[in-house]
Length: 113
Length: 114
Image 1 (cartoon, chains in turn red, purple):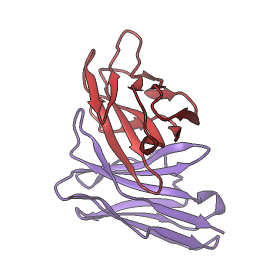
Image 2 (cartoon, chains in turn cyan, red):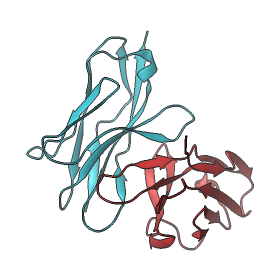
Image 3 (cartoon, helix red, strand yellow):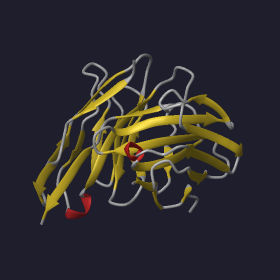
């Protein structure tokens, strides 16, 4: 079945450090891939997405590249800020006739000033 | 800005009581999802609807949970009877459906069953 595996947290970094959160997936068909972010006390919101192989999604300094050969969609940011502290979810949806979005378990990120 | 509205934001109840959570999806969205979030299990899909028809509720304990969409502006999730293990944050999300389309989430209902 379809699934998403992402690195466990929490991840703690100092401000201006480089961030990578790993995400790999298993899917039938050709999935769309997403990163969602959840700030404290709020629902999830879309951070970026990519819908085909080699596409790069980007937003707010975050980037992720759809790698079909390694079934990965790692999230990166060159210089994190305290305001980036949140929980990050990798997710996928497939083309196989339903609209389900499958989420990973989430990675909590703490940025220290 | 259009948003998904969930009520109540917080609910504390006693074991055995009925709980009803409500969701108003964004106007024009044709898919609605219910998710449950806990520390142990992460984000679990409970049920989802397309054009108000239930497509998948396999993630939902059928003996106590029920999900409905009485009309296009209202989705409900009921638990009867509630149990302490149901304590979690319940999220509703809506979307346009289709490949690559994103979901819009509500702020969630924080449920505590004592």
